[in-house]
Amino acid sequence: MTSPLFKGILPILLFFNIANAQKLPLVQKAGLRAPANIKVDGKTTEWNNQFQAYNKAIQAYYTLSNDDNKLYLTVQAVKPEIINKIINGGVSLTIKKGIKKTTNGGMSVTYPVFNMDDRPNINVNNMALIDPSSKDAGRLTDSLMNLNNSRLSGKAKFIRVNGINDLDTLVSIYNMNGVKVASAFNNKMAYTLELSIDLKLLGLSVNNSEKFNYNIRFNEMQIDFVPGIVITRKNDGTIDMMNVVDPKLANSFISALSTTDCWGEYTLVK
Image (cartoon, rainbow, N blue to C red; front, side):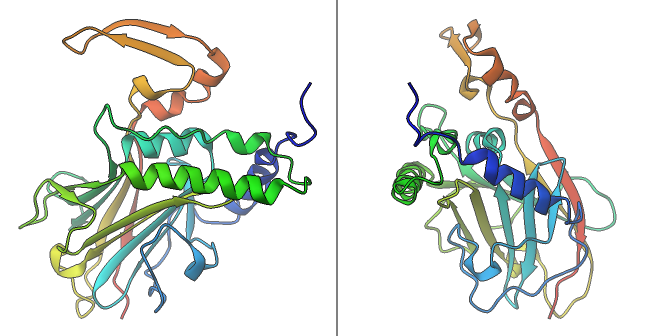
């Protein structure tokens, strides 16, 4: 028999998030000056958890901003399948100068990046089991948040970089080269990813009002990590057997198997 404690907080949170998403544009409409107290820490405190857009293609909230020295991206996902997609495939921000919207020849940063056999084991559905009216709800949600964040921080150690001069393809999150990243769950199991890039690495300056294109891409989730599907592979990496052990769970993650992205234009704000 299911305990009253496990009635489900996640559907309530999704309802309010969906209502909020409907009020936002699909693409951020203008450049935005970053708050003076901005930190790349996976938290949205300085933004009061408010975003500039909700894009239906990537199914996530986002804000692009800048100060005199850096360009910032803040992304937040609340749907379990999208969170799993981000953790297993990473988010890529590509900056492309000129009028043509193409990632070819662009400068990109991707995070998080994991080795295939060294990904964090995170269950983003556990929040649905917690009854928000229980006296233990706060303790349980904080405990779940801390557990998942500990697993993330223990594994997410690399950033993939493409097209940026003087930077290797794979760099440490502790680099001193002008790229910062962080991600974290809050106690409502919303997942926030933040990154910043020094403007000089992108060849940009707040003293130049040149408009540029940006692309936010959620990379495809490898089928090996789709909940409800068990994959066995041969020594050469080809699939030997695929078993759908939970069709309902697997079907809800179908969208995570393909790359999704959105385009926008941005002008740096002084």
